[in-house]
Image (cartoon, rainbow, N blue to C red; front, side):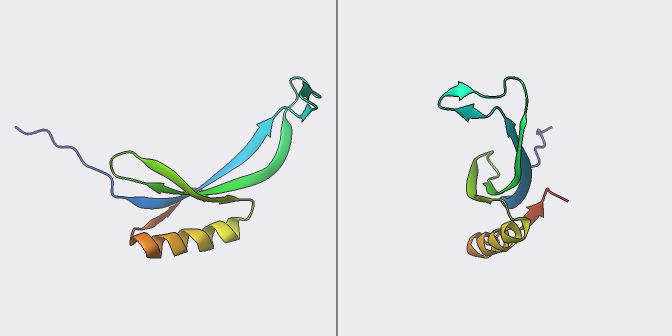
Length: 85
C-alpha cells in the first residue's frame, strides 16, 4: 500500500502578530523584563506546497493587508487564507 500524503496547495496567508520586546536606548536596555507593546503587525505570506515561505508584504493596517493579499493572489493565481480572523 502506497503512503498517502496530502500536500497543501500553494496559497497566500494573512497573518497577524503583535511585536513585544525590550526597548533599547543607545544599545542599552531601558526597561529590563518589561514588554514594550507596539502596534500590531500584519504579514502577507506566500506559503508553497513544499513548505517554502516568503513574506510579500508587512505593515500595521489590516485593511491594507487584505488588499495586498488579494493583489498577490491575482498575480500568482492562488487562494487567500486569512489567519487573523
